[in-house]
Length: 255
Image (cartoon, rainbow, N blue to C red; front, side):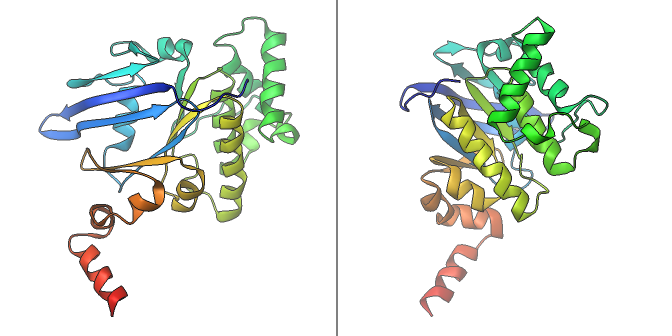
């Protein structure tokens, strides 16, 4: 993976809307991701974040709106087609091949671009070593704890050779020391030339990793910008803590 500088527009999402019957899960959401960035998508549970990821990555088709990746309209393309262009996602619930080794699991990602088995395994070795998983390569995936499985899910995605990697709550369910293992892994991925868009609830990670953040609530983007400014936005405080909390917290601080 060759490193690059930031700046060029990679992904633009325009006015995406998705309805499930009478429920509007995503409501005119728009965002952009520039090459080389780590961008976070945050919001309370049920805000529509994973649905938005599914729309971007081809697992769902929107009712309205547009998605462009590297200048190309990608609506209607299937996930495996998008993976070939370099847009790849992970999932909240990780499902490794339990009876295969970590190396073999990572190689399944490499096989999206590499046919010969030996070359795919060599790619898996290189990815595993780069992401700090060298000591785990010969272990069965089924023997890994949840933190190891989360890291394996990311490594398998990286082995596909993405340009843009969508990470869906890779730190969910991890303790602080495990989070501290995953955070530098994401930095390494970016330093290796992969742009990252991530859904995350672990605010410590969002604050330390992100160049920018978007906040989704009830399917709509309600704030965007630098992470510190976003979390101090009254609309964001109320989305997480309830109506009136921004004013009450301000009153407490002023007292």
